[in-house]
Amino acid sequence: MTTLPFLLFLLFLLSTSTLLADGPTDNQAASVRSVPPPGIAIDADVRLSLEKELKSLKDQIEDLRKSKNPTIERYLPDVEVFSRAVELALNEDGFFEPKDKDRAKLVLQEGTKRASELKMEATPWTSLLGDSLLGDSLMVVRGFRSKLDGTVQPYGVVRSRKMKPAAACRADIWCRGRSEKGLELQFIATRMTNPDPAPEPGVIMIHPFGRYCNANKLAGEIDTLEVLEHALKEYPIDPKRVAIRGFSMGGAAAWHLAVHYPDKWFAANPGAGFSETPQFLKVFQSEELKPTWYEQKLWQMYDCPVWARNLRMLPTIAYSGEIDKQKQAADIMAEACWKLPEEQRFELTHIIAPKTAHKVDTLARIEIERRLAILDGMRSTDPPKGFSFTTTTLRYNQA
Image (cartoon, rainbow, N blue to C red; front, side, top):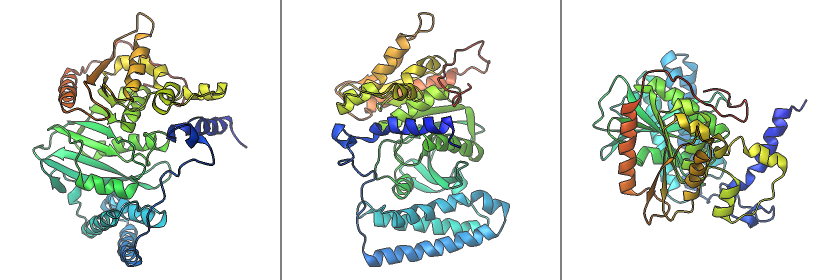
């Protein structure tokens, strides 16, 4: 029997489909773009070589799986994410540019290396002091098994080479920007070779994959929470010293995760992105919507201004470039915070980089990091005497 929650979920998907579009014409069935776009063909000999390496890695993984060794079972997802990434790219048209072939080789090499190490019950990639190095940054890709569907999902970890293991350090969850060509293969290769945005010394930066290009919503939302859960078990992170951050589409993710889970973070730092549906589509995509009543109702699940009261208990540092169209996201949230009832209204902190378009200005980032460090040091260990919590659905039912 079809349940009401399932029907509402289907309606919600229909009502938010325009968020993936780039303008009114892209919402017409005859002209809608493919997301991700079609991939490029790869030479037959290259494909054959990758398939051979992939089969070898999958055979090693199968042997590891049969061992029933607790250490191997625990860390097997750290190997499986590499084979899954290449297998999906080969089978699902996931090569978008020539250098993706090199990325696939890099990913298979790392997976094969880890499989050999894990066979000996060695896991050097799990150390705070191990794995790839670029400049002052140490980078590593980790994997976990999703509770949603049992698949292995990747995430990246970046920390300073100068960082010393501590009893409990700060961690920043960084939600990534829009990347329609950023499937598992491209994400993993990037997280192996590019530390940006690199964390401050003493901070561990965690990069969720978030199920592709969805602003960490739906399955991506749950994956982000599971990434945090996994990282808390693997690294010396203080659960009371975790910040939620991101820029562009990652800024939209940070707005969403901040207002819906205000008790999980000591601070939020959303940059650009979008924070609601109708005004964003008007400003950013020049769309005039005529939603039905139930579409407007379902928007309240995700549209962040409705939830603005929850930021009263979560210090939030919004960021925008002065001439970035996506400054609209923070402007809308600032207005929502100030329009709360008089006894609850507050002024949202909004750092605006002068004459800056869609990028994080260097001086602004320094100021953001300074303020995050201050907030981290100001955390109180005392329980709150009281707080207000807004929700529009029992899907988000506690703080």
